[in-house]
Amino acid sequence: MATMNSRACKTSIGLLGAMLLFGAAFSPSATASPLQASATASVNTVTQAVQAKLGGIAIGDSAEKLQKQLGKPARMDVSEQGFTWYVYNSDLSKLMMFGVSNQKVVAQFSNSSKSWTADASGIKLGQTLKEAKKRAGSVKNSENADDYWAFVKNSEKTVLFIDTHSSNKIVGILKTQLSAIPKAGAASAYTSKLQKPYELQIFDLAGAERKLRGVSGLAWDKLAGASARAHSTDMMKNDFFDHDNLKGLSPFDRMEKQGISYQFAAENIAAGYENPIFAHYGWMNSTTGHREALLDSNLKRLGTGVAFGGSYEIYYTQNFYTP
Image (cartoon, rainbow, N blue to C red; front, side):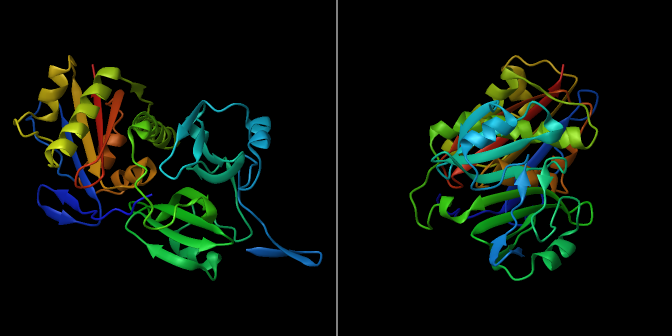
């Protein structure tokens, strides 16, 4: 996986943070204006790591055990790191994703406290980041970012995603076996094979976030998806990052041209995030409209679009609306 060269956040009032974000919302009854964009334990005589488990499955378990425990996944998505995500999304209050390579589980992600069993450190969802850091103890390659804290321990990289709007509580956990992470300088893995999986993951993450927060769900909308993919592609090909395209068309102009009639509509865009999980938490921690769009109960449908290439390597668009 190639390292991103630049991840700056652009808003209508300047630069902020370390990621590209922009958000917009609209209601026909109001002026069409964008929302401002935005451990180890000793067992007998052998020291073993007590691993975290997701849905009863630990990193290193077999794909056979995974499917015996949880059944067949709803989807099997390719990833930028070379493994395959087994996606369990039938109940978005317990969204689970397992990275599988060579028939072994090498990665896990979930934002559901119902699904995780903590490792020996006791780190879990709902804790503050401050408490998690105390529990983590001695770690390697610690990385502090606006939306997460990452570290390496026991041959695993752990990323703790936080909610900066709620006392930096942990709201998502991503774990990856170090051997499954491509070495620095590896060729970019961003290809068209990732486009649909990324779009569906963005949709799943939005739905799971709303479910956990008691907000009504979202229906997938193919017209909104077409509009969103077209805009991500346009931004990539023509090297710009904005809601209005170079022809001056707003998100709402573009949705209408796609055949969408709406009472309410909104758009989020992002670029430079390495995958949909990181983009999602970038939007959720925004203070300029992205979070509001994601959690707006007035918005009922969502289409997502991703494009690879250009200055930021990857562009994301979410188009929400209510008929």
